[in-house]
Structures are given as C-alpha cells and as structure tokens.
Length: 395
Image 1: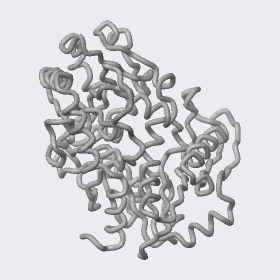
Image 2: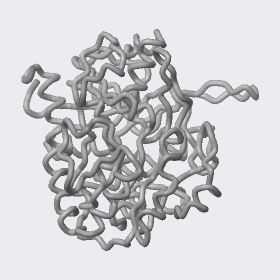
Image 3: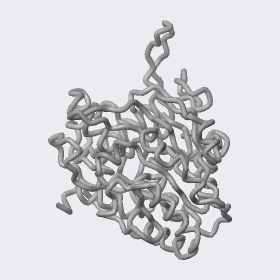
Image 4: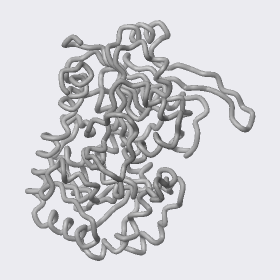
C-alpha cells in the first residue's frame, strides 16, 4: 500500500443518528483525515434505520441521511459519504424501495473500484461479499464476548466474519470465558479524535454517564448467562447515599428489552435525565461529557463475566475531555493504567471509594485522565495500526 491511501470507513452512524453512536464511527474517519488519507464513509448495513424520536424503524432513510450529511459537512467532508436504505416490506404489507443517498452511483463505483482498504466497524457493511473487489477488508468488533458467542451460534454471522481479511476486537485480553471462533482477533481500542475534546470546558460538580438499561437480550453459552447492564446495576443502587453530597446523574432511556426502573432509581438518590433531551446529537453529547466532573458507570454483565478487557468508547471520550472515570472492571487493568484518572471497581465499596478519591483530588485525576487518552486512545495512532497490519508492516 502507498503512503496516501483511499480508505473506506463503514459503521452505523446513519443507522443510529445519536450522539454517542456518531462519535463511535466518526472518530475513525477523523483519525484517517488527520493522517492525510483519501477517506470516504460508506454505510450499507442491510438494516432499516432507527427513528430516534419515535423509538422505532424509520420508513425512508431521509432523516437519517440528512443527519449524516450534516455531520460530514460540519467536518469538511460533505462530499465523501454514501448511505443505503435497504428497502423491503413490513408485516403491514407496506413496500419501500431501496435508495442510496450521498455519492452518485458513478462516484460510488469509482471509489469502490479504486479503494485500498475498507474498515468495517460493527458490520456497517452487512454483505461484505459484495465488496470483495477491494484488496483488504478489515472487521472491527465493538461488542466483544457477545460477538464471539454469536459467531459460534450463528452460521450466517460466522460466514460474514469469514469474508474479512483481518479481525480486530475491543476485547483486548485473551479470556477462557470467551469462545474461540477460528479468527485471529487483534486487540483494538476505540479511536478518539483528541483535538475534538476540551479539558478546559466549564464543568458541573456531578458524575454522569449515558447508558441503556438493556440493549438486547441476554445470551447463554456453555451454561452461563451473559447479561446486560441491568444485571450489574442493582448491586450499586445504594451508591448515591455512600458518596453524598457528590451527585450521580444518569442519562438513561426507557430500556430496550426490559424497562428501566426509574422510580426505584430516583428513590435511591439517582438523578435521571432523558438522553434525547441532554445529548441527542454529537454536539450536545460532547457538551454533556465535557460539562461533567467525571463518569461513573457499570458495564454489561457479559463484559464483566467475559473478562476480555473491553473498554467503553464513551468512557474514552470522558478521558479525552480530561474527566476522570470510575468504571466497572472488565479486565482492562491488564492493558491500561489504573489508579489515577482511571479507577476500576468490582464492589460497591470500591465504587464509593473511587468517587471519593476523585472528588478529593480532582485536578490530579483530571490531568491523568487526559494523559491516558493521549497515550492510549489517539485516533491517528490507532487507525495507523490498522493500516500497518492490513499492509503487512506489523505481525
């Protein structure tokens, strides 16, 4: 591969036009732009778009495409994206045609014919066999443990993974509690465009997080249940009383497969806000993080049980904003520095102690948080590693 490459990033930015999801995929693009590559974003997930306000399926893709166009235009790459609404029929009998947005058909074919590499994050390319004309296809797994379990239980998804040349995973550590899939999973961290996060922003005296009570159903492998955040949170319901007067705030929705127990949380001293009010898009999401004193959160039960070293992309953004984090241990201490700026907990006592420690010496922890982001999550460095491995420069 030459020094300047034509690289396609694919993700679910249009599929889920939400603040945190936007940053999850956009920062791959921004890291590549910073390196000087010829970068395009193409989303062809085969999934119907999510209507964030209605909480269900979109019917055309127009709103989702308009959001994607606005984001790309803001970063000066408004002519370098394409999004496919797959079309099809609903149970109601309504039929909707397939549509492409963004690049024209001719422009899109030219990009695909000349591209050196596709970085397919979270299956933003749903049928990679259609893109096999490109020399290298890279898969990035952002949901470790669950991805590997699905691969051994779902033959079609296993074949989807097989279509790629290299496989990266946010599961950074080998673990006997994660099944072998036959792929070589290379460790990867969430890229963060450091220049987009501002440690000097004004902050409130409150620890926050943005979370789903549940994202999808629990899964079972070898007789063990790999669950969601609702499996982990009950052990920490009493945390606000333990750390008072420090305020703990959750930007939390209704829950996707099981309902969020809002009354129980509020009775326990948690402050609840609606994420669609405080952080619906990438700009308000960034402001919400930067206006916080830090983050406290649990992880999905499957991440905790799997011990793969998963680390949240959202939490990486808190670090980049110079906001200390106190987060549930998933084994990431084996690959990230823990104790200053980044504190891990396994029990209620450890969670309370971590928040008290940060609150008592905030400036020191804030400085350490940004330093961790610079050393471990810089987008340009992380995407460069993908390029190097794809071109055979690293082993």
